[in-house]
Image 1 (spheres, rainbow, N blue to C red):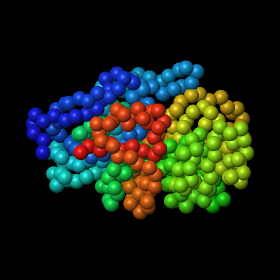
Image 2 (cartoon, rainbow, N blue to C red):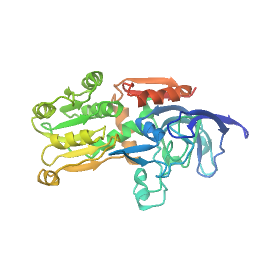
Image 3 (cartoon, helix red, strand yellow):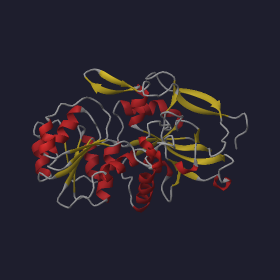
Image 4 (cartoon, helix red, strand yellow):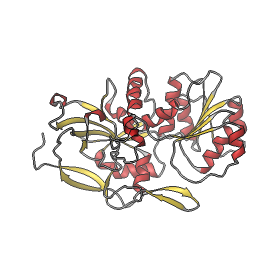
Length: 358
């Protein structure tokens, strides 16, 4: 139990790209609809790397500064959070204290038309945890309202933390595909943590032909293990022919978890007429592509960013019915946050890392 003058530890950065620092701050007292959550687990996400670096690459040496987009220093990363309710404001049911919950981190202003539609992840005045507000690389996190806390059901809490971004982002992107027929293929570009979750989810949804593309042989092997029917190295000169053959020239959707200029162009070349390329990754770059091809092939190009509260509720229900987490998940102590972040940035993570606060 916390006292009025208690402090807690969080790992924050005070300058972009210059390492996380262990910091002690006073534990906040929740008021009104606020809830104080003791963090139990927090996933280390590739979005954390972009925020830590402070920019998205736009190609041609240009960058989109995240500080110019409203992110203020210092930043405590971490948006994939499972924790236990420790204290509540006077407008929250106190019987919830002691319950372990999954946190929805993509918080909006709560007042605009987008938020009223339940799409707070698309709010133009965001207050997302681990981005605009202190996140889960920490012992505690303050949640503004009970609606952002969700029951885990029977899920392993360390695995369930990944649902808040990795799982949610892939699930929301897959929903954008629409119905998938038995003779149609889905191509997944990038078989890192999100790509593997996408392949696993597609497999559990009954998709018959899932094609994974990744430069890493190890990641291609993992893709096959979690449900891909074939996997290829996209750097091969005959990659288009290989995918066209494996898909019977019927790739109805491309899920691009890299989001670079070369991967988007590859996806545009692979997708069939009337198909969709859904871009999730934020590697960055810029694209030059003949507009008539987009029109004559009737291609839909869709950007997909995290997901809604409704999406997360559906995903939790789905995960409780299926063995979703058939991929490598490494649990490490919270005090290794800095090392874990840099390991992910260097591309040395197979699957996902989850930090544990114990």
